[in-house]
Amino acid sequence: MLTILEALKLSTDYLEKKGIESPRLNAELMLSDLLNCKRLDLYLSFERPLKENEVDKLRDWIARRGKNEPLQYILGKTDFFGLTFCTNSSVLIPRQETETLVEMIIEQNKSKGKIRILDIGTGSGNIAVALAIYLNDAEFTAIDSSNDAIVVAKQNAALHKVDSRIDFVTSDIFSTDFDNDCFDLIVSNPPYVSSGEYKTLQKEITEYEPTQAVTDMVDGYRFYSYITACARKWLKRSGRLYFEVGKDQYKKVVNYLYESKFENISTYKDLLHIERVVMGEKL
Image 1 (cartoon, rainbow, N blue to C red):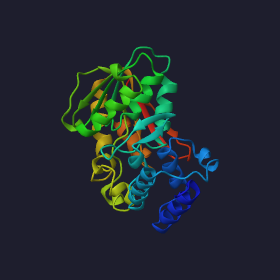
Image 2: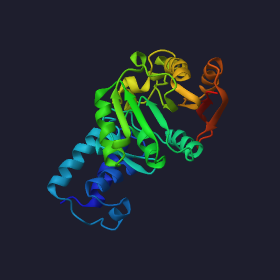
Image 3: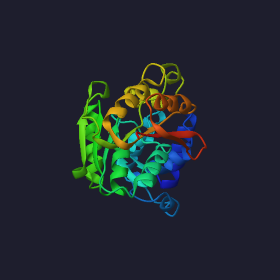
Image 4: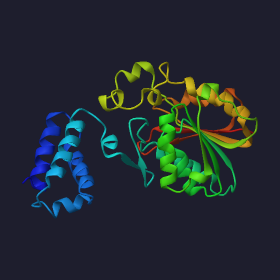
């Protein structure tokens, strides 16, 4: 029978040959999830033999990872802002840099009481759900053009017991309209990769993540310019617009907000010191 130690070694060697980054970590995460234990527990049970069904499932997972399928899709979950979110190939995998966006919104609006928030391009619902947990009196509308993504977002809202405060809507932002002056905050992490840059991304992204959630198929700014113009109408007075932006995009996005007469425009860096969040107020 294959032991845990043998399974880790064989899996690591296979993933390394396939060019997978951090092969040992990937093998440990898959095996610990399969056995429903912590990674540390693997090291305390090296000689434990795996059952036949466990070996079969691990082989399937390792083979999928070897073909560049993201670990988060294989396991069906990922961590974001200290929370667990369901994931599949219908949604963009939540990234650590987006935690900067969520953190800034919470910090700047935690004392505002009952507010209405619009999340544009909600995907897995990670932004809306995380905000709902920390902004207890906020009510949300979260839209996405993909109905499959909305299904996942609803699952995550239910998982974290905030589904009663988030209205999920399948809708393309370019054909969506809301009443004037109806939101206190608008937040979006839109597809901001340009068509040219998209061709250079790693296979985990281009072959598995939903294309429409990654790139706008033009210059990377299509959503920013349109959402900024809409936000000027939809936000209440003193309302705030928050964007996540790609590397070196902040200057042009700041200019969009300036041209739409937003004030108190600010930018915020992520943990890698990249300008990651742009915020403006409608005064």
